Amino acid sequence: MSELKKRLSSILESPKHNTEEKLQKVCHLLDQEITYFNWTGFYFKNGDKEELILGPYVGAETDHTIIPYGKGICGQVAVSNETFVVPDVHQESNYLSCSIDTKAEIVVPIFKNGENVGQIDIDSHTIDPFTSEDRELLEWLCNEVSKIL
Image (cartoon, rainbow, N blue to C red; front, side, top):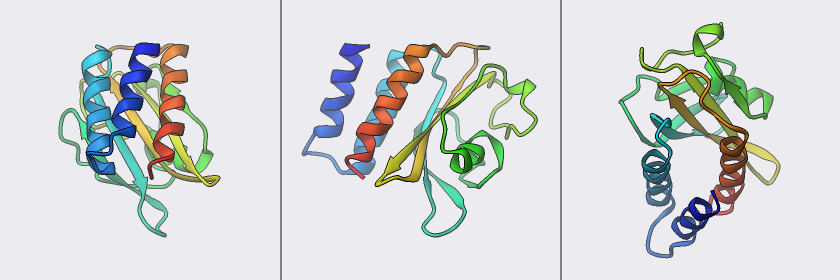
């Protein structure tokens, strides 16, 4: 994981790319390096609205380009301000289905100046794949991402 963190840091610190490009590169790297990350993307608070808007992502297209606060796992994290790991999405009553292949999901909030401004959302086609190392990596990443927003 430390090698992956170094590579993620070098993307985020690159002076050659804007924020959108950096986040897209982060999604690509995570998608390539972690085999059970099957959809990796960012959602951000949509201005003053109580909703999230889809940012850069890698994976199948999604109809969920705008998610109201409270709806689905992403909407719940926008309200709870806490990482949410879902080992089996079919056991979750408030799950918004993006793909019939999705079996698990992890969503980690991004804070800027104490405010929840967005999140990274990762879907997996495997039941219960996410480890404590994945969670630690993603929480670290979201802290690093907040520095470039």
